[in-house]
Length: 228
Ligand SMILES: [Zn+2]
Ligand SMILES: [Zn+2]
Image: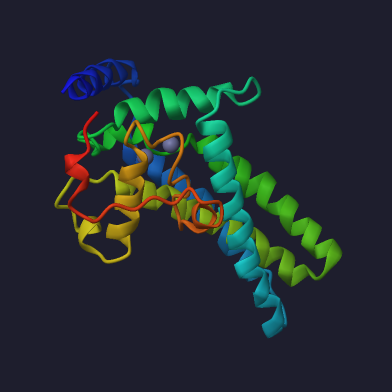
């Protein structure tokens, strides 16, 4: 069981590199604060909402799901010059830190390798989501623009919170809640080294995995049998 030894060694090395002043709760708190503040601001700008304008919510979820899938599959698991930092952080660090059978974090300090850096949340909340919002405002209506921006921001927050949930230790309440339990299982399957480059790239909902044929499911409880 060489992989266990390797993962344990990588964890030791990574933890030594994490700055002493790093605080997982502060990291998560800043992600929550930025996301919820900007999303609430967008929602509070909505005036005279028409029912049809809510159709932008499924559209926003669809766009986010596609971006989540594409960036994970073609940047997180493919070494490209432009996104080499993300590749190093994801395939190099995240997958080395969480590799079967070590799939759970041991303390909130390990959230350093689960959550994206706060600046990415800020980039999405202050730049990418408003950009999509301005586009929709220009093309359709201001309400749709604000709803689109809020949907993108909250979707990214859901990604971060779910990912923390997926790597919670066995026995945590998260793994007992239906749907969360199945989503966590899908992600843990993705963490198998033989499957990480080919299957289960969605984290929030496996829509594009299903559409593009990269969805892989194993019955719950069998994952522990996966070994290299
Ligand atoms: Zn993960
Ligand atoms: Zn991955």
